[in-house]
Image (cartoon, rainbow, N blue to C red; front, side, top):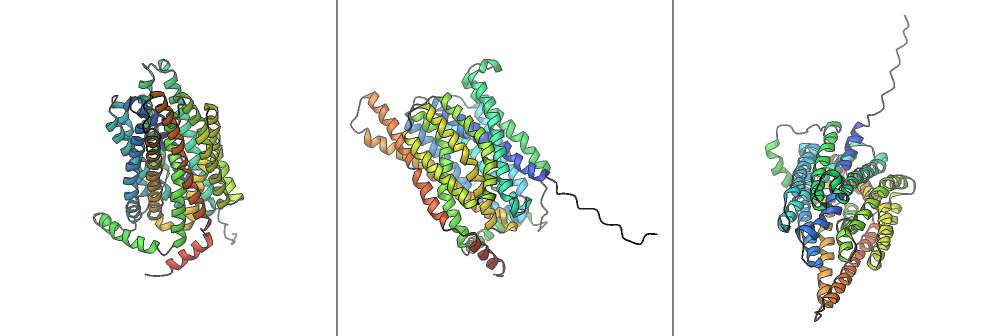
Length: 457
């Protein structure tokens, strides 16, 4: 008998299903970000639910709706993150918020013309569901992969989001341009059906996340009744502890400013194009260009972050956004808007993905939902400032320029001019964010984390 022990089999490679299940949620929920938030809702709100209203007033209403929804998520995000960490329920809470957003998205199909208040309410509640789910989606990332794979995995999520959101958006655009091909009466009915298709797409593909991403093991079983109460107590403790991580705070502040500019351009670009006189079809085509350019570009930024460095890659994107903002304020032709769409598509997914993976390096893995709650809180507070700033500055400039003017043609030209000036308000956000990010030091952040983990208090 051979006494030599039988060598152990080589360990099986880790399954990629959890990573793909996680990334496919971006494929699912990006349909809302693309078709609803960036594409059809701003157009339909201005031309259908808020028809006959001055363009600057409808822009201000849309900005207010975005701001209110973001404020609710911003206030809830840190507490939700703490509750998710303590109850080990990131995935379940993700699905709860997601399906709430899905339901309110489907509701848009049933809202009749002129009901801008009801449309804005349903839209804001859908944003709360969408953005709240993203708090838990982001928090799952550092638990799925080691730090060396964060950039690549985060970029995979954004890349699939651009592709999935773009494919559904392409079908919805075809439906609105040729509604009779789909048995629909007109483009208005096609847009309402598009909102319903987003709900079905989002809800259907989210099931892969539910099935493929592993569940979490509860660390404190049987204490569900006290989770909410203890969440409030822990929120105070977390605020006290996070003040001892100045590098994390500095990054969050920098992120607050520059992601404000990114989110404002995403949410308000179509409304801005309409305000300066471009056609809805041209703007929709530009959005499609951004989506399909964004798919390979997000993957490329993941590679660039690993090879060239995350910090340099983020600064590259910020520089591009500064140029885009100035270009957007002076452009005259739809062809220029298409050019801007290409340029934005090259960097939009990259700055989002690398910011998420960079922050994941600065925080303790076991408290990821808690810290990503603050990350998303500041991101949503930024989304309050940007659209509101753009809408308010446009109204103020128009009022100033139109003082004493009664000619209708001249007033229309003043409205377009005010809209152009309003977009420049976004530029300052990129500049401040870039300056603050310069002072963030990853090594110092790790030393602060080590010191905090070694202090029992």
